[in-house]
Image 1 (tube, rainbow, N blue to C red):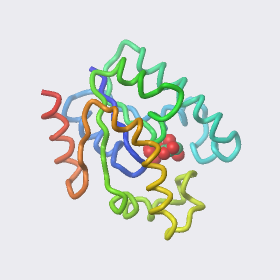
Image 2: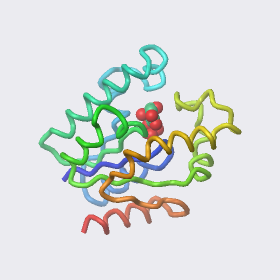
Image 3: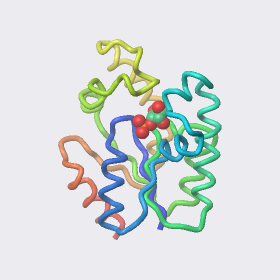
Length: 171
Ligand code: S3P
């Protein structure tokens, strides 16, 4: 079974993915880690030295490689993954289920401020400008996120609660 988690940065994709993998006894993969391991550099460094377009091309390449592999996994994607190069359509085509982990803008801001430095897209945005930045970003990205097979509301729920909810939705 291939399960894909999508959602904005800080929505808990990796944390919940690991819990799901443990409960479903399945391999956990994080697409950012796959890129870092294959390219031998960090995502931040990749953005800095090669730029976002290079990153998006690699992201597309490794996503497709995984989706078309004959194997089972829970895959946590990057926040932008569904929004480029037909990636969302490929996920819907090859995965058994795509879950969008939906977190409100205030919820995202609370989670992202402490770890802003590690995130190339927001590290230079002032904290007071984050609501507008994330709001605009979500306005664009929702065109892709909302195509997911399941939308999971994540505000005020523990990762375990969310993982259990997803397992329930898998039937
Ligand atoms: C990105 C999200 C990041 C990472 C890259 C770009 C985005 O992943 O892929 O910095 O475009 O939202 P996480 O969502 O896992 O932080």
